[in-house]
Length: 314
Image (cartoon, rainbow, N blue to C red):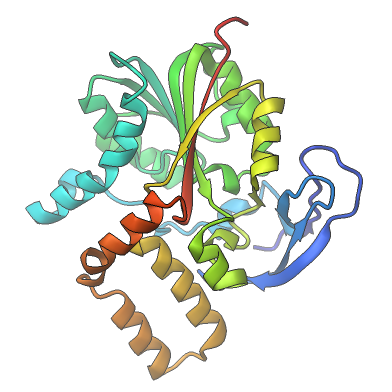
């Protein structure tokens, strides 16, 4: 983490100087550095500046980062295997609803490949892109998946290769989401579907936790979108908006915000350890599930999934 931090600017080439919202440190994983969230006064885009350069960002993703989990079938207990597959089901069905039969699917930011493995079981021909070398190697060696290790912009897939592309909690991590979505557009066949999930700035958790909300996870989250900037992103990428849904916000996303608040506001010691231990009691996720389901139904969940389509004609 010795690389110099860099300044960021509006994705949409607006010249007005971004307005400072608040300063923030890495209160989630504790990596060093002072960061700040800004808002473009012309379009409302939220951006982290300063931020790590692309060449240095991998340093802020340790090998035990939450998304990098071992294969579901390696879980010792049947209940854990069932639970993890059940947690993936909404994302699996999110794509399946648009197709009468499976085709080719690309998952960008596929981590260790568990989602791809589930889609393969449903008949999809799957490929992945993952920037973290250990996660990509695991997906290839343990799950025998076709995974490119690197950035989507460098991936060697021909234009129009896929009927479906997914980016689950990925876009906010990228240094140039507009370039990423233009690449998605290029890789989709005419009429192909992209589904991507992003932190929802209008969520109940965003309002409740403010700068401690996990959506503002500096320095891993680099951009956040309001409705206007989301529409602009799709327009500039030549993708047609289809729908949105809330189903990924759960107790686990809430507790990430809670832990961030705890790390920032409570000094290390017995009190913080106790509150951390209590908030991670396994019983709390099922007990609170009805509340988070209710939030998602109201469109107030912490994560929103957006669906868009490539034009039928090039």
